[in-house]
Image (cartoon, rainbow, N blue to C red; front, side):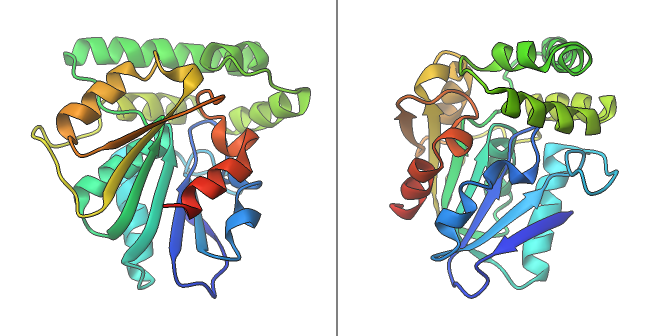
Length: 249
């Protein structure tokens, strides 16, 4: 796994994990706002890393690889572990693993395992896979409208198109299947660090199941609704606001 690092001289570590179907430079507007104060580490999730031909494996496997990457470099203490959407799934997995000392876990619209029979979760994964793959083949703009009400510029659509061209069918399938079925504990969890669940005002209904999951399995979760934000928008369109929210933790 390639991990991009900024502000190495700083003591406090912030890790930023991007959503699916974008690359690590999804955070290009956030990094300059944090690197003077924090040691910012941004993993390029396999399968979406345009610098190599890696394939996505699973939420659990990538989370483990990232934990090992940090630990092998002597990094056990993390001030903020932030993940958006798929990245939020990895944050939850890493919290459950407990291998790092994290002060603040942040799931921004994070996807949690469905509490449904396996046959239904497979059906949902097939539906999501078909939506993404057809978007890759036919119209990225229609695809983006399916997941967010935000109006994207032609430049934004071109960015998504370039990432999707790099993503194989295997990577796309594994992303949705493993987000839906991450192997999490079946009993309530409590962590030494604070678990934050952020969700955009525009995605409140879509995140209903995830919020119910967090209330049931991580009862100490601190919830915050972000006004004027839809799914996956925060870092891309409101970088200064996201950076300030991290600084204020």
